[in-house]
Length: 116
Image (cartoon, rainbow, N blue to C red):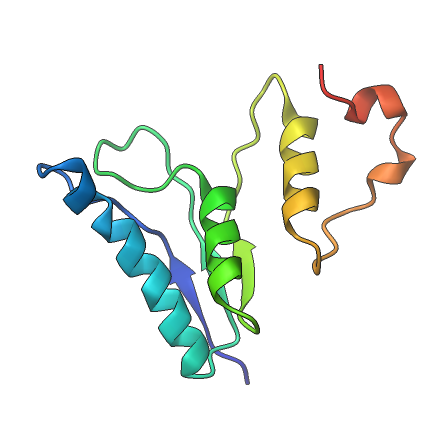
């Protein structure tokens, strides 16, 4: 049986920016510690417009966590694809996850995968 984490980072509200960002820093350190304890993976949530500082740039956060860990498997709990540019998000995801197969975009015509 494998154990992992599920959750999201949030900035602390009502304090100076540097202190507020500490919530993101602590979440990253939490992931590093999870790897040290032998946990298998972590799935990070994405939230928009909650007004409580929850992370909306999940892929950016996962990239930072990947830079700090070596064996922890990382994933998104959900990605809300932009309505106008959904393939751009898939390209970003494929670019940032070099060890995970996301999907076969090769079957799409090139014009559907290129940036607008």
